[in-house]
Structures are given as structure tokens and as C-alpha cells.
Image 1 (cartoon, one colour):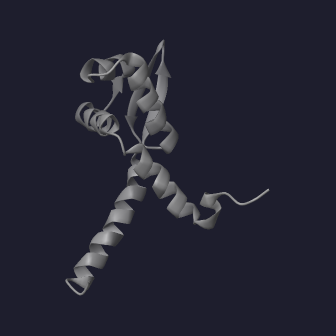
Image 2 (image 1 turned 60 degrees about the vertical axis):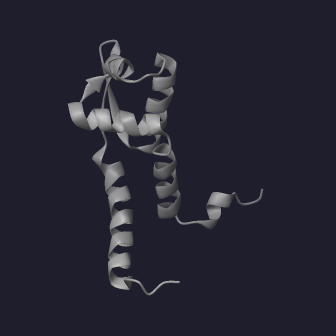
Length: 110
């Protein structure tokens, strides 16, 4: 069987791509912002804050959780979501490298 396209990249590059893709929708950005504001919440609270149907919000939560950007714990019949700091540390490190590069480089680019 042939190699997939992701096989040509490092694990770190593939992980960052998954994280970036998960953040590539405005509803997911809004969910992350809401979770930062309230620190933790129950899925129903998120649905009340979003201009989206409950199944749509659930799908966005699933994508964020699969990417490792949020965590979810079952509490009774509800799932309580919160930010997964480890996922954001990877993103932070990537952008920190870009910032350090651009500060060092200044305007010496095309």
C-alpha cells in the first residue's frame, strides 16, 4: 500500500495541522472563547450561547475534542467541557517560533 500524504511530514507537523484545522471554523473559535470565559460548562450551556442547532454544536465539540483542544468529562447525563492546555501549548510554541524568527529577520525578506 502506498504512503499517505501525511507520511511525508513529521509527527509535529501533522499534529499542528490537525490543531489548525480544528480552529479553522468561526463556531469553534467562539466555543473556545466561551470556554475560556466560563472556565468549564455543560454542553447545554454552550448550545444556548451559539446561534447553531444542538447537533451542530455537538459536532464542533467533537472536532475540538478529537484534536485535543478541549477535554470532556461525563457528569450524570451531561458532558462538562473545558480547555485542554496541552493542545494550546503546541500552538503557542509554533507561533512563538514564528515570532522569534520574524523579530530576528526584520525586513530582510523579499
